[in-house]
Image (cartoon, rainbow, N blue to C red; front, top):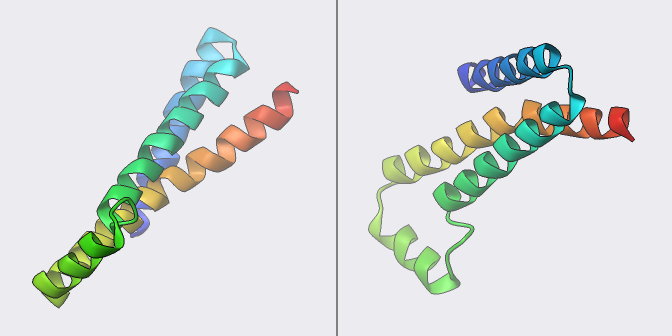
Length: 97
């Protein structure tokens, strides 16, 4: 799980370097926000939050405990990747306005 957080911080660092080279703080806001939205959508898909109650019930009864942990683990990885990008997007928004 720490690796996912480090990946998120690495993405923030790359976006920061691009923003500094281009001398445009809007790039930081746009790209960090985009990465955050993509990661949260993927986390929702992997966690099953986008399915209906019937689909969730069917998934629960047809998958093993190991499969369920793998699926929720993937969702957590995407949340941890998106979290530093969310904070960066919020800070960039506050800085720009």
